[in-house]
Length: 610
Ligand code: DMJ
Image (tube, rainbow, N blue to C red):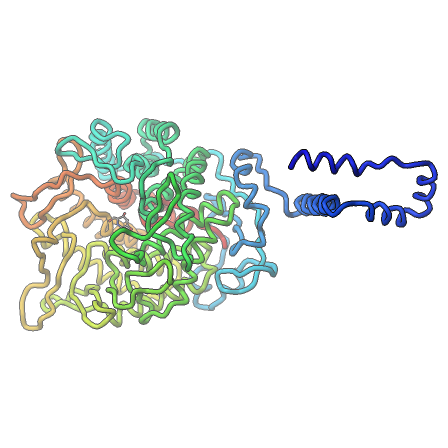
């Protein structure tokens, strides 16, 4: 083929006579025509191809379509060039990043903005061309690469006894992990062994920003070194998109923002790229699992469906990755899922917990809950709205509608002390179950965050009532630790509010209630929330601390027989200890709610202005 091409090419260079030259000057068109007629069909095809190639090259170099180069990251952008030259395919414009230290001080009060329904004025000006999150036609302003603050953000370490006690707890956990499980996902502190789930050194990665915020320089240096040299994503193993996104991607991005170290961003880009095949379903709703090495994505082995909370709890991280790199494909893929779920029919804003990746439809007879598999759908409606500078109205509106739905369909009061709780609807909404997962105790904190951002004040009453109930889940157990699942007594005329079944009596060192304590304290300044947090920390110290770390326990009902489970989940370091440390801070702005939005695994990400 190559030989054939060469032969034909030579034949094109016909010698010209001086007479020809003369004619050429006077009749260039005629000469061209004659020359063209002499060509064989193959030769003409070659000419066509050359012209086409020339046109494409010219298009490529037209202003506005060149690859983006950043003085901060030539290497990264060379990886991204292909994507940066296809702005017309982008669903969303990369948004201008707000510098981390850039507060909202100069803006009009958030509350007024919401009350005046004036968010239209805050929307970015977009040109025509593509579809945006609102389903409107816009054109991307592709190409702005976020530069992190060069020196990162500084934290001065513990400033009081309680904070020091939390840091001591963290170091105790870290020491055991380092000794027995370094580089593995989780520590098994009783047997002094480890547990691997995704083979990604989860505890190290998930802990990075907690370490940074606590000001633990030595631990941060060793964790950073491990990430730089030993964290590889070429792992021939299926991982769960949601878990890896909130724990690993979220922490890498957060560590990048806080420390200003680009190594974390490079790792995040590698991981994010390997996760993208999950979105290659017919509907765009992601498959739950992907093999990071082969990049093959699929539904869970046990079901054709993905969990609703999982597919809607990846957007903060994917959006941030796009904003940091200027590559819109991460944000586009994830934001489309939220927009799709927005268009689905719901019951007063409440969603079933399963959704099919191929059809894009809910499994309509599945449970409605703010606990497992439903919880963070609601959380990310609010947090995405905040992350994008409160400019995407449908997210706020869906959140408000859902909270009305919660109040209307899911809340009840206990018979004796009238504690308010959030139950579940089974069989597609037919049967009410007076059961509440500990996971649901994130809700009061999220409600308080919404009120802080100008959402209806009545949400605060709901938040305060739920705080009381969640606190009771702890306080009514002889260990002062809450069970995984609590049932409530709603039979009027009977006594007792809380029922814990044997199979639900475990405590996994989960963070949700201390998370809410931090938000409530931030928003109200009420020190009772700090006191509650201190009691709970004492209980963790008493019943879950072991020689080599902290362990989940099987039974919160019997202080003499807690049945240690020999497992320290990464979220204990990432979330539980982080929120406690923040809760006891003397500095109300240690992580300002106006600058950061924390992902579902407590990793802070910057708030953007659009
Ligand atoms: C964490 O991984 C995250 O908070 C997630 O959203 C819910 N479950 C655990 C902690 O309980």
